[in-house]
Length: 272
Image (cartoon, rainbow, N blue to C red; front, side, top):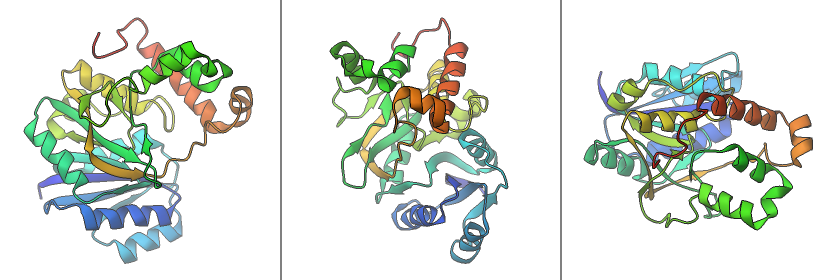
């Protein structure tokens, strides 16, 4: 049966966090005609039991292997029945009406292809979630001692849109894929997420870039708020140690190289 809103939740080995996410959706989505799909990598018995006993109304798709973010999302997109699709990581807790606010914005503004909320840490501090497109220098500045210099800080601040008033809705280059909403007619024109970058990095950057290329806007909408438990596993060590010993950092660097190769020689902002 056709749905107005499909909600895709991607999850990996953390049933207590997944439970909180699903409970927040039950309480805080006001739209009546919606469905929830949970796509879970490396599924274990406790997750299957929780979904079967406590969330029988949720469509659950367990995977034995760790598929990575983009493959989970793409599997979900193929199974959705809604005209609008909210994509969430399981570590997102939504505020009341936040999904409905984003839904209404997409309905009212057909030029928007992707929209994302303001993300908050659980202490209420704002978490960066909208960005300019990456350049190689930005990755170097953010991961090495060079980021301490004023010239680098200015570049990083522009990358984070700190030169803009982020209390106001605005067009941005890309939005973190932890919480984004799109519309079926747009993503069907743009295509599915890129699956060749790796497990969890740059798919959202690339997808937003392709939406811009197809004529759809990417919008940051801070009047909708969601909480995000965001672990910084890839930024916890010095750059050299991280590349040598931190798998997440290595994945990030490999994904970055593939991304830069794909867009070599192309304009690096939707404003160019």
